[in-house]
Image (cartoon, rainbow, N blue to C red; front, side, top):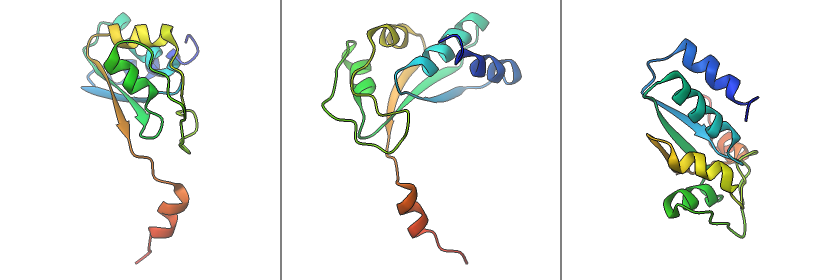
Length: 119
């Protein structure tokens, strides 16, 4: 977590007045680092963890307040395909004030490229 917390420190020291920060969740180190830095700096920024729609293990776990593994994590969103949430990361996320998880529908880059038309 120490290494990934540096981006949160850079972000918050440059923009301490952010209302919310959206953090993708894979195994949880990024969101845990962001929560920890926010708390150490005494900021009120809301932290929103984002999981891929087809890899909802962390969102399900956040809602259940305990690890909820899933059988699959079918997403092309590299780094967000978690099937088995780490209990240590979940403890930090679920105990954080002003933090929550949301799922996002990921669109394939190939699909996006095929539906984009230049004028």
